[in-house]
Amino acid sequence: QVQLQQWGAGLLKPSETLSLTCAVDGGSFSAYHWTWIRQPPGKGLEWIGEVTQSGTTSYTPSLKNRVTISVDSSKKQFSLNLKSVTAADTAFYYCARGHSSGWDWFDPWGQGTLVIVSS
Amino acid sequence: SLELTQDPDVSVALGQTVTITCRGDSLRSFFASWYQQKPGQAPALVIYGENRRPPGTPDRFSGSRSGTTASLTITGAQAEDDADYFCNCRDSSGDHLVFGAGTKVTVL
Image (cartoon, rainbow over all chains, first blue to last red; front, top):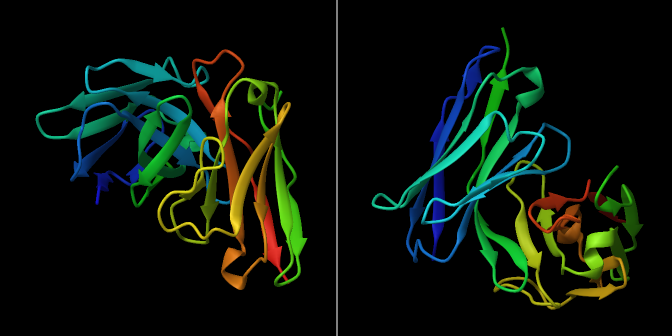
């Protein structure tokens, strides 16, 4: 059974860079879209973007200028960097395995990391 | 404008049937996936594709699509189905994915 384990700094100051990493335990690393999703406390989900094993990326337009998602296939890990954070970036951040074979879905998900941006 | 629209709140009596809808132009071309989220937990997939259930999803959950509306139906709602439900689909460009704002389902 595939499990995703994520980690990273949970408290940042405005203008700093958010960095999170997600490790894939079990299963294949290829043929999936490794995805980051966030959720401000008490609010809805936002798809941030994805990366494939080959390094092909896609980002949501609203974050495109600040976000980088990268992959390390040798370690079966992928990472999220979001630069110049503000309080609006305070959220739970989830990594997920994305499937895209005729239709799209996310399963499984990581446990989530709460990132707070505060001065 | 929101790409996917969901009703914020829905209630259902224990054992009855409830349908949650997700509306958006891109649903005419793409199937939605549905996620259940309980307080303090990560979302979990319940339906994807053309009414497919991942292992562990009870068969009282079903999905459908008609035009620009995707629906998630819980037939015989149980107390443990009390949760938030989010739909997800590609956006109108087909290049990105978007979520609906979510529906809070209360089982009475």
